[in-house]
Structures are given as C-alpha cells and as structure tokens.
Amino acid sequence: MVKKSLNSLYEVLDRNQVIGEKATNVCAYAFFDCGATKKRVSRELSYIKKLVGMPVDLKLILTEGVHPESFNDPELREIAREAKSAGIRYTMKTTYQGNKYNNKSVADMASIILNQAYQSTLYSKDEPFIGTIVYKGNNSHYLERV
Image (cartoon, rainbow, N blue to C red; front, side, top):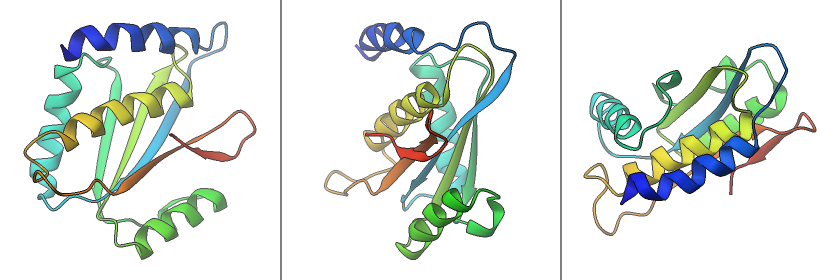
C-alpha cells in the first residue's frame, strides 16, 4: 500500500527535477521531537527510508539536540533557535548529491519518512507529532514544508 501510493509522489517529484545543471548538494532540515533514543530513531529512519523506496543516495543525518550555532546561514540559525527554545530534541539533515532533485523534493522525501516514523512504534498512539521541515526555496529564503 505504501509503495503504491509513492508512485504518484515520485511522478510529482520528477516534475520538480533540476535538469541540465551540474551536480549539486540539495538538502532539507527537519526539527522534530521524539521520546525514543537516538539509536532507536536512527535505526527506524533508515528502515523506513528503505521500506518506502527512497533513493539510495538520499542521506539522513540525525543529530540529537538542536545546535543553532552550527548553521552558517543566519535565517536557518534563527529557525534552529526557535526549535531549540521549543524543546525540540532532534535535527535531521536530509541531503541528495546530484541534479535529479531540488530542495523541495528532498523536503518532501523527508516528510514521507517522518510521517511513516510517526506511524511507527517510536510514538505512542495519542502522542502528537511536534516538528517542522524547512528547505531553501527559489527565492533563497527558507520555506516550511507544508
């Protein structure tokens, strides 16, 4: 069921391809809360990435804690400060090296992975999902993935 529903999403992602440009490192950042240990979250995210058929070259970099000082971009640093002050526990940087996808497409993939994570045993039945995914848009400002 999950795999079938992703086929239409990949068609949408394919329409967002960046064609004819040299390879780039595109990325999105997720700031989210979860009570599970970093080891457990990391293992589950890797499993979900494979389960839903994400590109092998899509990298998920999970960090426990939000460290605004680690971001060079002032706008992203401010977003991270807000996440930290809200008590968010994890930062996930999702990257893809190449010219097949853009930042929004990578943010969409991160959203699929986190949506599936929320449906997993990482979260209890009534536990709300608290988090956001941001990516740099065409206007060079960070946009929240909605």
